[in-house]
Length: 501
Image: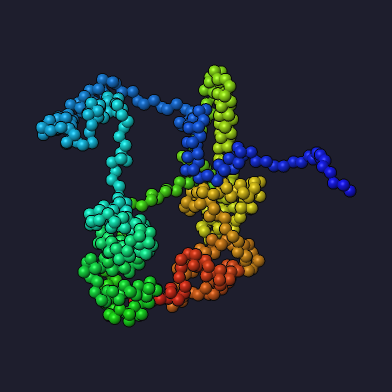
């Protein structure tokens, strides 16, 4: 059979994601901060979009007050205040100098304008002052150290080395870079880098540029003239203190118990992380996306947080007015803006409905947790929620990403409620992994010094009491995930606490 080219027609169906559909899917997984940024960009790009200022109902009119009464009261305040607080010009005139010498921040233009409120309470010539600009902020550690380095170091090369050392500090104030790396990078001698480091270790706060906790505490003790040989031996054996091996610590330090207690009390007064006292990256406040409250009839009520919901409106009257006067490319641009605005408003509404639907299903399946606590948290997967609300698992995953739910039990990420299942040994229902972790922590918190529970013992108790079929290595994994030490270390800790008491 000879091979030859030919034309064929085939009819097929395929699912194609349009750019707008892909953008709608992306909106689902955005947090409220990311969504607010996206909306701000769209408002700048699309002239047909505008923010909704509030409810459609008109605001209630303020109570009417006679204008004469307001004017008389205001005149009295101004007259009284002018006698007590002179302005900048009067103060400068009394000192026989220019205003700029007394008030450096005042300019001639500022003096000619009124910065105070007028009779109507509004600020004339400028906006109202931003009070946040007058709030004192903590200095950054790097800025604080660079200022000191400029004063204690003479040469420009030493200041350059100091700048690299300061940049090598972590947020706690510890040096996280190698001196040999800095010397190689700058082409300097290692001895010069060490000399600069020695000078910087005398900067405030004492303890910065240390590499270990013992070195940091030693620098602070040396500043107080309290670093004697016995205290140094204690710093060299902080691992025994962390392991609560008091007997081994007494032997290594070579002192009696009373002296050891005094030295430990002195160590507690030191700051092992001196860099944390300075400004660092701001902590973001978590704002819930969904509120779960108890209704009058005892059922659960789900409500979206209106404060984080974007309110975007399509200005159709503006479009109708402008479209009559546009032609060609301007007409096309305006039509594209209209289509984008329609899509965005519908997508935001669909996003809100989807979040509400997923949150309602989570609350329905985790009713035991909301009523009785974490011990009744049920195992739940994305597939279980997706099947109930007739959505795809990927949609549920996107909806629950970066979303938080405020419940009577506290504020939780929506991903928190999705936990793996642990089978039951008695043939009953499966148990949630989070509930098992909670029970393990309860057992460890309730143990006494004479009855420290091993991982095998905890696994056996779970199997007998609640029918939870869990292996010893699973108990160990959950315990380590909660930063709970092993039974050997816990026994030492309790013995040391009993000795201290």
